[in-house]
Image (cartoon, rainbow, N blue to C red; front, side):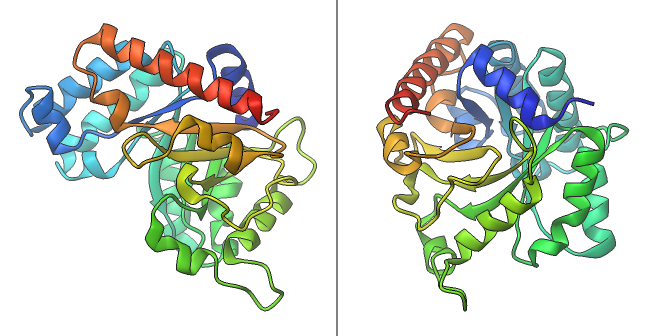
Length: 280
């Protein structure tokens, strides 16, 4: 089975370096004149998939905004994942799970096993129970050609105190995570399937990504304050795949399909130009 890293590289080459989050906030549903109900959620997601699944490299549903509706919301999530993949987008399910033992294995099977109705190409995970606790995610992803993105230096300012704290060896906590991801990728060629999350707004995050060997998910564009030109500063010298992510700024242009497409094309062009300036 082709690895996630290889599929992502091909997608970025064909469609450009952009991930669009599917974040159906209640205020976005209202802005689209949709009810804050499972039916409104389904209409929102159907429109986003119609507009973008054949255009962008990656769509990233935020699980929390589906889970708040219970089983009805999960049914919409399953449909959104399936439709997105059928139309050619890779799906990165933003769940930020992190647990140990059999619980971690159950999460991994829920999102990364082909028999699951929520089967996605990749997921986000938290390493703070310990990096070794991520083994079920990494093993399940490897077995089925999936990917895992590990939180390292996130886009929220409150995370910096922990992520930039120094370990006994002098490296930051974020750098220790990056180094363990690099080891997990090993000699995978051309790109590994284990990535990190480093926010566009993280600034000088105290991490060296030059030996990562896998993809970088870079959230924070738009509503969180990140700008395309920040990509060149934060990721200069990175060897690998940088995948900028934008959600609310693009989704706010809906519900017109044409407006969503135009906004996405503009964001993708700006990201591509910024990354080119950083020789990425």
